[in-house]
Image (cartoon, rainbow, N blue to C red; front, side):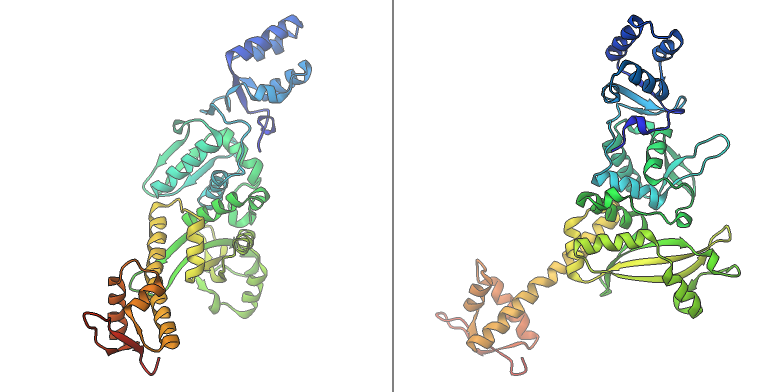
Length: 402
């Protein structure tokens, strides 16, 4: 929960609704409050420093001021209109927004003329739209307060300075995330909806849904990078798979813990979803740094179906692919149930009919059982021992090797 008075008071300003502002102004006049300070309060945008002082001097709680704020932001920024104060990020949307910034966004370091910038960089429009919706849900405002930069090699959202200051209170570290080895904010790990939002965004930004009808393997993966430059005595000029690295480097890499991966493993453990984790190797950056990649892989029908029931991936393409994957699992589930029912009938009754199978499967009509009996007959699982008559159905038994 972020209150407005947590923000840096030297660069953030507010607008108050007219009724409340006029009421406070009248109180200041009646108390002969210093003209210079009173005049600053009466200006269009009021600094947080002035608000805090007046709140203290008049013994009016900051919460009362907070209820009457209509805009908040920097002196020359678009800021945030109709803010949803206090800002509550302990939600699915809040978690997705923070994860998006850590994954495909950045909180740049302070410069000579700037306190840094907050951006989200992604070519996928559905993901940019999702980030905007998360923003509106958490902070209020309107989409026009978010800048969209459209370049050939970059398409990114840039948020106003007040959102930058809010996120900096949570993330704290600025600059390349692979070098600072960021953690998931603790409040996210304590909330079920928030951890689901985190996993959704991790897959959307950093992951893939690997599904191909012509290939058996089905999995969801995502990767995280970590700077390991100090482990190497000299630069590298190409990507090196983990197994081709010297054994001493392999051992050192396994001692380097990527905090995001470690915490995401805890989330999956909490959700009861099995996974595999492994190191892919190292690669050079354009700036001469060396980074390693860790990957989480979720496979097996039960894990993927369980995850499908819990999450909705913000990427439209990836979410659709995930649904197709799990629907394909369901297609294979019915034949398996029928096959098991037929084997049970064959072992218990020795000789059985379509009516027996219909009752076992609780089908409403018998036509479905005829179809499956023909299919499993062709597969050699059962054989017909007696043809049907107009009074009695055909009889079947398991083939000797079944």
